[in-house]
Length: 416
Image (cartoon, rainbow, N blue to C red; front, top):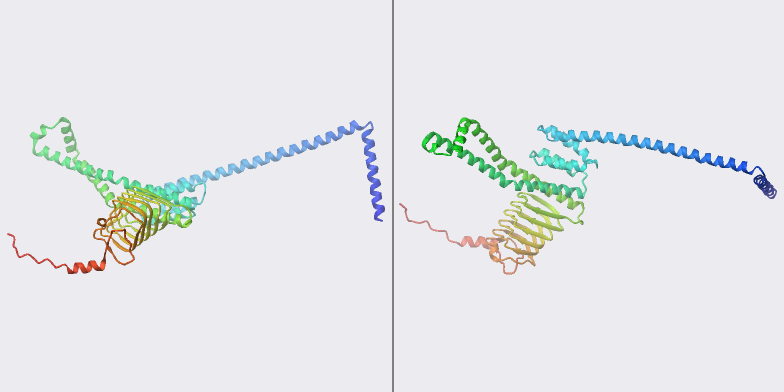
């Protein structure tokens, strides 16, 4: 049965082949070829029209999409600008609300860097700790290691600016004070010594007379300027440095913890890090010049490949901290408490450790230190290792020694 069906199909195919052969070889061939050509041309034309129509529709959809995205971006940009304005308003609640809104922009790749820069600029002028904490929290959120380091660099620049402006600020205060004294002398001269006044230069006379005609307003303005600058110097300026230093230490710690095996470079120049708390930071290279760390606290800090020049750690506390592989020149560690601290492969030059306390502290393969650089320093255990030739008195021995010093007898001499 199957064989008969196959034979039937075979005969049909042969018949169809003969039919097309006769058709092509007959006089109708040109007519047939024309029809076929026209059909093929029509098919391709139709496909081209459909393709062009599809492309046109795609372009329209793409244009609409781009237009829609452009509108959305413009709306977000307008909202971003409005939020920035609110960020610098005086009312605390408006500022906190603006920071909360910027936390949304912080997660937007198109606005992330601008948001960081705006928040850093606001931090530059802020001392309210609720606002400061809100800004720092927003800066930290969803920041990768690269962004954390970018923020840390910005904070370092802020701190340096405060450090650098201290000297000109002091000069401004001095100039205002000098101007007030000069005015008072001019007034006294005009009122008490008319002869001396007449001998003054013409320009000085004009200056005196202008002052006398406006003396109340001038003195009031000078006093206002002096009071404002004096208050800023004695309080606000100090705390601005403190805020930026603490924030920098925080972001360096988070950058280190984000990837402990990655390189971490610390580079400070003319920074004021007094009273800073730095913890859990390990650097692969360290350069610190002309900076202050007075009364600061270091915990679990490792500063490797170190270059230290003209720095001060006076009154600081260092715990579980290491300084490794490098040079330390003109660096002061006076009145510092060392505990579980290592100086390793350090070349010292003109450094001092006066009145320092040492506990479980080692100087390993260090050069350039002498006995006189440790005047009045004490050690509190037997685990300390000092450079060759340097002997530090144990605290117990020091207490025994001063107990044995006889008290000075009061003098019987009476001075008339």
